[in-house]
Length: 113
Length: 116
Image (tube, rainbow over all chains, first blue to last red; front, side):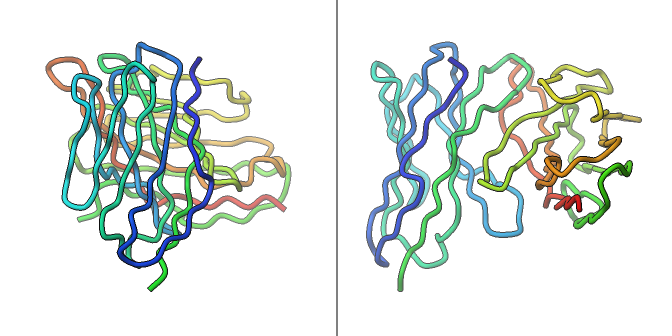
């Protein structure tokens, strides 16, 4: 019940394409869903996050779509660029608790020029 | 200006040795974490301290011992290193809000540990 399942494991798109990464969770107590971006040799960095009281959140070219009833959420990257090539992690946690993040397995994205 | 720093960045050692990794944050946060990232890039929480008090202690071999001398520092000591300990270890920090949430976590650059 503590798992977060992420797919696909890897993704290749052309520049300008819209890669979509999906995550699913079981624990309905989760109420904070961040996405982290990690470049090779660096630590993960928070990209965008959503709470279950909204169905969509957009920050620049990055959009999270959230489906509470299906217990799924996804990351869309509009007009993807080669500089977006990185590993993306979804995560979930319970606010007001220890802050423990349960991460998905990660998706390696390659954006071809 | 580094927010969360770790030393060393690389650590290569023999099986059976004892080693430590240090972490410091200058964000004024009250909570710090250790994560382990394995060769498949899977990230898993190991420990967390809030104001020097241990609040998360996942199922980790007791060869791993965290120590927080103050809220800006969290060190990880590993005894009797094994081949399976080879991984990248990340330190992170967050600040508990007035509402009790500790959501946004800032990660350090990682320490790549290789056990030979």
